[in-house]
Image 1 (cartoon, rainbow, N blue to C red):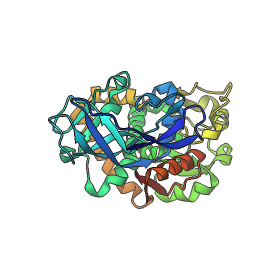
Image 2 (image 1 turned 90 degrees about the vertical axis):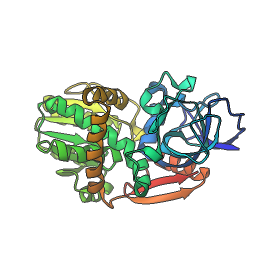
Image 3 (image 1 turned 180 degrees about the vertical axis):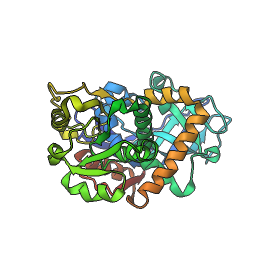
Image 4 (image 1 turned 30 degrees about the vertical axis):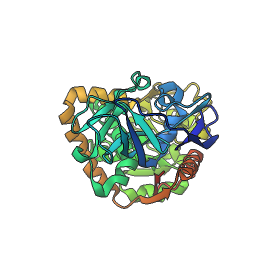
Length: 357
């Protein structure tokens, strides 16, 4: 029996655990048993932007319901494919569920693509799975960290790479909203290492200021209410919060000194509606990581891109150190509860939630 968390695509607070009958395994297919996945703000972005970017299409459900994608580990439970044996472990894009059936194609020692027809219109980045036995990124002692930080870190890496290629649009500093979020921390770490002349300013809630300061990733940490105290210097804004009022405040404060404004994710779901209206400075541009990943791989080559990411990843893990405590929970019901808590924005940023469904 497969169990999954079905979420209403328009009313994201409606989430229920459902039982699904397992279908006979088609020839060439592999049934994966989901071992573990992380629940982060990234998953909330998948839900919020699900229709716009097709995130609901990866793991379809009936009617108005959908399954939120997760990043995690799984093991082959049943195989009708000659290259896969029971027990082999993989890492990649998984449903908030106990099982996933994939149709492996482009199989190599290192990984494969899920060639299921419904997944082909979406970015190939999400259809790639790593085979743990030959995965250069895998570290048995850091599986939780990879699930929690890995996808978010890569987004931060791609933002820094894009900004650096554009010479940071002539800015002296970058302002990061939701500075306690994993993606913001990833960007701050990569910028600290690869763009050290650009000051990193973290914006966060008053309650998270101490945590963000303790990470050591930012040159300056400011509470949201204190945006008006920041020096009016050439700036770029990277908005992870999705709070229209806050974005308007940033644009209003810096005006023409805001050289570029980009939107990444949406951690403050209650403030995502309504738009920011007419604002000073540049029009905010959505940052879609898969497109930038394809561009970066073309520029550096697959091997070169992988090496650069790996170098920054190791430095990021050294930066974050013990700032995040792992909170491992058992059962699919725990996944539902963690998703709803993350949706409400009431998760301690010093906590990393891992589910064993």
